[in-house]
Image (tube, rainbow, N blue to C red; front, side, top):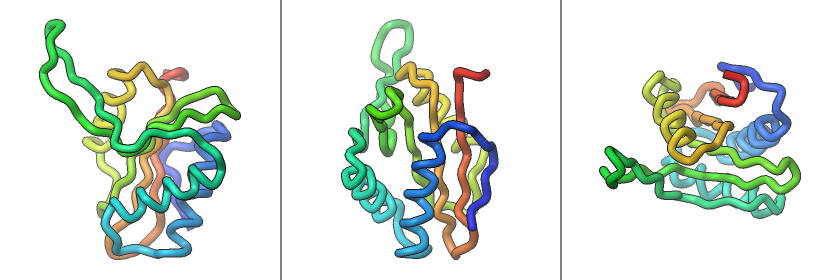
Length: 136
């Protein structure tokens, strides 16, 4: 049912992929990103995972604030003592700019793990892209 672009053995990734599959199986395709985000947050709360949504990521240049970006979800999983950035998409396909966006968030916040989940417009298989900077 789902396609993995980059497979990881990380259990946290697998847990969040299961959440995504449950959401997609239940509500299907064609919704705005904010609907999938709220559904994902429901799963996080149900499973007692600490998280922040719409977290502001500052962008600095020469020691000064040059602006900010906003990521979808940052989890703080106590069971695994790790944080992971989760970026949700509703696009035809995950693209290189989507990956670079998450990598920038990870670098700015000093977080090693990132997951992109695409709930494709028009139906089709869920797409996942995992990023683990600790192995790069």
